[in-house]
Image 1 (spheres, rainbow, N blue to C red):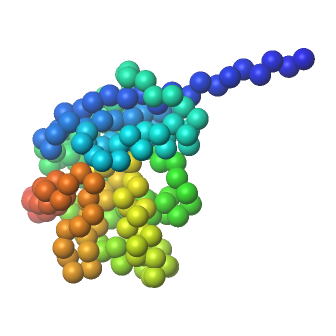
Image 2: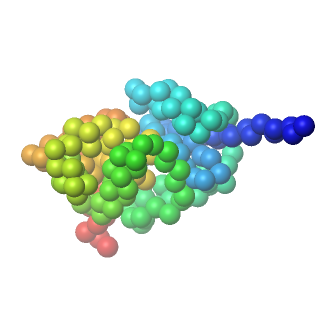
Length: 179
């Protein structure tokens, strides 16, 4: 008789202070799986989705990824860091994965439209699907969905609030020119 050992996957959860407000972070052994502003409307749904996708429980606690995340966020907000290196854990559908990988390729200080993203995916008619996948990104700032704008350049669709999107884009523009 073989006894199966139950694997207990844990998503560690903590809060981080930023110039834009308190953020909630989640980490697994693989990397940061969540970074959101505390008042995000779908935060509880994101935790539920992660618990299901990763077959994990969520617990308050420390994980070594949090120290690196805080250091990198501090450097980003100081204008000294343009590319994050903390490991990321981004479970999702193949389409979501493709959209999120494209987000990671948008250079610091640049913007792209949802249409441009859809075209780069070779799915030019999937603008709304790209927008939805963008909105399902669970890792704000590090996976820079704030760099995606409407085709006319208007700032739309940022779960952390348009004012934060505007702030992040202005911050990156200001620090991009210095370097």
